[in-house]
Amino acid sequence: MIPITESTGKRELRHTIMSITRLDKLLKSGPDDRLDRIIQRAQDIDALTSALRARLPVEMAENLLSANVHDSGELVLVCSTSAWASRLRFESNALIVAANKAGHDARACRVTVGHHQQP
Image (tube, rainbow, N blue to C red; front, side):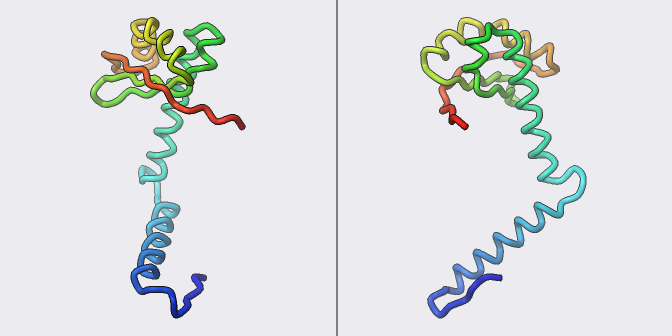
């Protein structure tokens, strides 16, 4: 239930109701809908990241945070620091081959630095 007060503007109330409606549609979606596609995409990214980590030395694998292949064929690697980014760039050809063996169509590689959050 959304508390309605005199200070609640019609725009705010409409926005809140629309947000709830969109969330409700997302959660009630059937097979092959948005939520399933989001979950599948996350699983694909995780599987690719795991496959590439398996090809790397342990310390380097621990610093590969995520991997993804865009529709353009660009393999994007996200690592923890710029130092690890430099080291991963030297492995880019081998990682493109590994991504292709994992069922992707990677043709180029870009390495970026992300932020690893400790649990």
